[in-house]
Length: 84
Image (cartoon, rainbow, N blue to C red):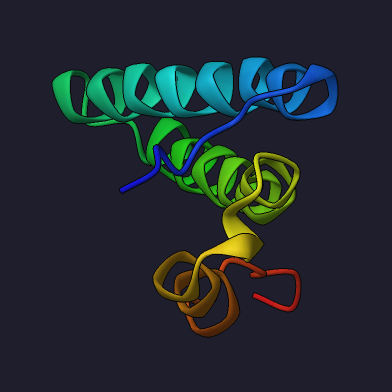
């Protein structure tokens, strides 16, 4: 079985922003839980949704549309939360 990732220039650039979005989202969530700060929790949720918005583009450039299983994941998992 082939390794499903083949990160190129575009997908690697998007991976940087995706990774930082996820990390800062969890750091803000931790701060919100420790200090009982609702605004940090909401900002963490918003940042997580923005990172998930980048995910299909990053994975698409990494050739996830070439395999049947990963193509179905990208088509049927709701990554686009723009209207939320």
